Length: 77
Picture 1 (cartoon, helix red, strand yellow):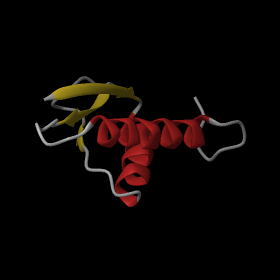
Picture 2 (cartoon, rainbow, N blue to C red):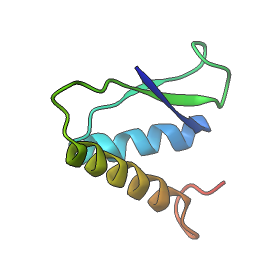
Picture 3 (cartoon, rainbow, N blue to C red):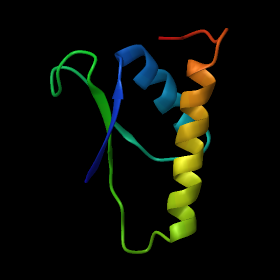
């Protein structure tokens, strides 16, 4: 499993919803499994994932984070 640290619970939940709606598959890990506001995704990379699959997922995750972190978004740290 590959952990991806997301941070705040509200941001992590919004990013997760965005990635899931785009067709990505992520497992969100929240408190009490991890400390409060130290959420992360647990990603499972498989042998049949291609480099382009991984690149597409990273782009989707980056877009989700940017959308929620942008000035004027519903959630901004």
